[in-house]
Structures are given as C-alpha cells and as structure tokens.
Amino acid sequence: MHPATRTHSHTLGMTRREALQVGYSGLLGLGLSALPVSGAKAAAPSEGKPARKPKSMILVFLTGAPSHIDMLDLKPDAPAEIRGEFKPIATNVAGIQVCEHLPRLAARMDRCALVRSLAHRDNNHLCATHHVLTGCAQPGAFFDKVASRTDWPNYAAGLNYFRPRTDGLPTGVNLPTFLMEGPLTWPGQHAGFLGPKHDPWQLTRDPNAPDFRVDGLRLDPGIAVGRLDDRRTLLQQVDRQQAWLAGVAEGRRLTDQQDQAFNVLTSGRIASAFEMDREPLPVRERYGRHTFGQTLLLARRLSQAGVPVVQANMGIVQNWDTHGDNFGRLKRTLLPTLDQAVAALLDDLTASGLLDDTLVMMLGEFGRTPKVMNTGRDHWAPCFSGLFAGAGVRGGQVVGRSDAIGAYPSTTPYSPDDLGATVYHVLGIEPEAEVRDRQSRPVQLNRGHVMQPLFTGAAG
Image (cartoon, rainbow, N blue to C red):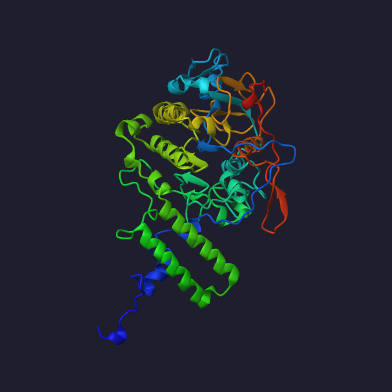
C-alpha cells in the first residue's frame, strides 16, 4: 500500500474508524437505547419517617390471568359449576389449602402469604396488565390500548428514576419479553412517560433454548479490559473533535451512554449472570428444563448479581388466558411447571439468605369467572389472588378473603395501586414521591396504600 493511502493508526493500536465503532457500540455490541442512563436525583426520605434498607423484587408474572378459584382460593363447598374439577390439598400451615396440582408450593406455604382479596375494575388484558405492573391505571385507557410513552412507568423505571445505576448493572430486567409486530406493544413493560433512559432491559430469547445467549454483553475476542480502558480514553478524545456532537445536551447524553457501555463490559457481573451453563446440571433440572424453570433460574442469577427488579414472565402473553380447556391446560403443563420452578426459586433464595431481602410476587393481571363456561373461565377483575414471600413478608398466612364463590372480596379489597405502593415500599421509594411527566409537570408516583398485613400479620 502506498504510504499516502495508508489508514492512519493511533498509538494505541487502533484505527480512527475503530475508535468511531467503539464510540457507537459497534465493537461493544450494545444498543445504546438499551442502556440505563444516570442523571435522576435520588429521593430524600420523607421527614419523620425512618430510613429503610432498600430491598429487591422478583415478579413472577402469570400473563393472561390465571384462575384464582382453581389455584390459590378453591371453593370446595360451592356448586360444581363454581368449584370446577380440582381438589384442595393441605399445605404445611394448618388451615391453608391450595390446588392439588401445586404440591411443592403447598410444602413451602410457611414462607408464603396468600392475598385473596385483590380487585380492580378492568377486564381488558392490556389495561389490566398496565395497572398491575405499574401500580397505576393506564392514562387515557381504552380497550386494548397498546404501550406508549404516555403510560405510567413500571416499577423498575420508577426505581431507576430515583436511584439510577452507575455500576454497569441495569435497574430492571424483563425476561423473556415477547414483542408483537414492530415496537413493544404490551403496556407496563417500560418507563412510559419517564422516557427510554429509564427503561428496563428487555430479553426476548428463551433461557431454556440450547443456544441461549445475550449478545453484546461480552468483549469481542482479543479485546482485553485494559485495552478497552485505553480505547475509552481515545474515544473521549475523538468525541471532542466530532462536529456532529457540537450540541452540548445531545453530546453529553451519548457520552453518558458510552460510559454505561464501558461499565457493563468491564464489570462483567451482568454478563456472568446470563451464562446459564455455569449452573450445575442438577440445579437446572431442579428448576425444570422448560421455559418457566430456566426463566426463574435466570431471575435468581440476576438477583444474585445485584439487579434489583426482575420481571419473569411465565410464558408468552396471555398463555394463562384459559377461556377453553381451563382444567386440561392447567393440569397438563401450566401448574406443574410453575409449581416446580417457583418452589426451586424459594428454596435457593432461602438457602442463600436472599429471601430476607427479595420480595417474590406471583400473580396475573386479574382472575377468572367464578362460573365455568363450557370448558373454561372468562376474565374476572373484581376478585383474584396473589402469592407473596420474602423481604419481610410474614409467611404462613392468608390476607383477605373472598366470598363463597370467589366473586368478590368479603374483606378489604386491595387494588393494583396498593400493590404498587407495597412494591415501592419494599424497594425503598416513598410511594407518594413526585416524578415529572412529559411536560415536566410534577405527578405523584403512586396513590395506593401499603398492604401492611403482609408484613405485620394483622388480619387484612
């Protein structure tokens, strides 16, 4: 090559083009829009309230809404068209019964609390999902309103707004997140009006797949951490010279994201969490070699790595939507795989001591109709159930009751707003804290009330 045409190389051993590739995550393999960005101010504790140690959460989300009457709130004395086909079994706590197809959870009920008086008004999947995953009704809601930036932020986004990460770990991970055509469709999965910089990471691949991997979380072959730090220095020099970065605000935003990309790669903590093959085979088998099992195993690994909010979707959207063959689908696949996986998760969190600091919630967006219709049950928001454990939850109790047919709460109902207040309470964020909407107007993060009986054991 003629000297005049030779590509200029910097003293660090990389070309100018390579430097630009690093700058825009080509070598890093990271989409900048997926990275959390720092900059939000942490919320100060409310005056007169003692500071709480922030805890974490794993949300086991049963998308499509499972039948509460056939799982956690059976009605064996009701007429046949109400009680259905399943029988209750005793748990390891006297007086508490659950479905016969949940024997492992029955054996661990002393660590769990059942809430049987959850309720709201929306029988539509999308709007109800938003309500449960954000603790707030969807702004401007209408039938099947898809996700938009007018939505309320989900729990990971709310936490990231007040406590943004700078250590290379995301505040939240959703897994596996199934996308509809084009952009993210299912509401409650992102930061809504807080903007993309507070979005949790969305994983679309099945953790049970033999070739499961998360691209972009490892250094390319031959790039050592020390050399990457050198490239960071060079990148900063190149960035200062780029005319298209002249806009101060936009230039600063990109630089913040680049810093996050370097932090992700050089810390290695999040990349290691996704390496499922590091788990011993007996552990993987204990969770179950199916999507539910490996999703919850990955949720445990992410929680151990320090990710504070993990949403583990139990299947594709609406796979718990049992309008037909309700009992067959629950008995054949849904309940046995869920029972195995959640039991393994509770065991591992208990053995490691993480259950003391990790709230585990298992629920869907609403319940199912008390009356069996043909072979299934339809949508029913006026009453449903959830299972809670860890982070100070008193196990071995039932909070709230439903009526004789599971149609309505017969005690104080708890709304998704109350669920959200409880989540933020556990995460160390005051539910009434203010955030800014898209017009920079102050709005209250949550308007519910903490479900205190979960933690006090008092009748609720």
